[in-house]
Length: 81
Image 1 (tube, rainbow, N blue to C red):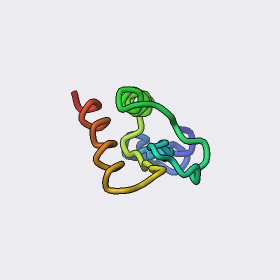
Image 2 (image 1 turned 135 degrees about the horizontal axis):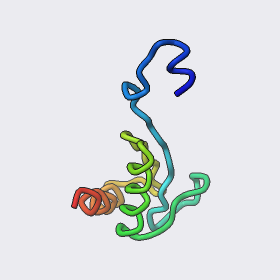
Image 3 (image 1 turned 45 degrees about the vertical axis):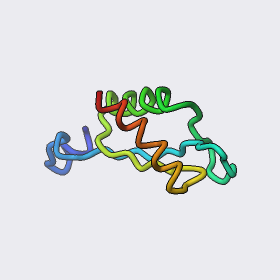
Image 4 (image 1 turned 180 degrees about the vertical axis):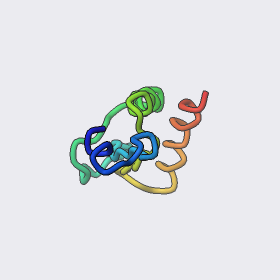
């Protein structure tokens, strides 16, 4: 907030972005420090990011295939509930 004040910018105009990796089975182990869990756990973790004020999430999926993207979509459905 101090930096925003120093340059005359309203802190509420900044969109906070976070990136993280999610382990999707079968994982290749190629992404560092992946978050592990099922869709319920993934949704919980994304809620925590949202509660911290992040409005964008860059999700790295390991393994990233059409099937794992469909699986991950289930976490987004839970997040939206």
